[in-house]
Length: 168
Image (cartoon, rainbow, N blue to C red; front, side, top):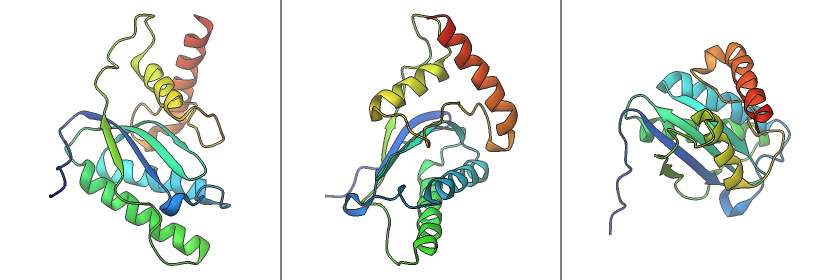
């Protein structure tokens, strides 16, 4: 039976995840987190994605992103192969990095929060709850635009998070 086609449409919000091949640790390798982050930022810029949150755990990652164009499949193909090639050069080994296809879930219910929190803060909290961990590669801030605006956006997002935390 053929695979189900992925759901893609303009303005879709996704929770994307993938695991290392044979559940091997990827992000414990020195430099792998920075490499992942840079590759993700490059993909966001190239495909026009809006990155909202991400986390890298020892052997897998979670990403929350929005696609203004219906280009998730094409973009993830580019992101996965580019990261795989860069990672293989880093560790000097051949082969694929991730096991199977990435998983993508549509996120539809983050438009509002009963406590009045901005939806991006709610989304980041949801991503954190799904992976249940906090580490150095967990985005404590939310990107509210393209990675080219990161320094300005980090300040805005940090202020948003601080306001939300104080109001609890």
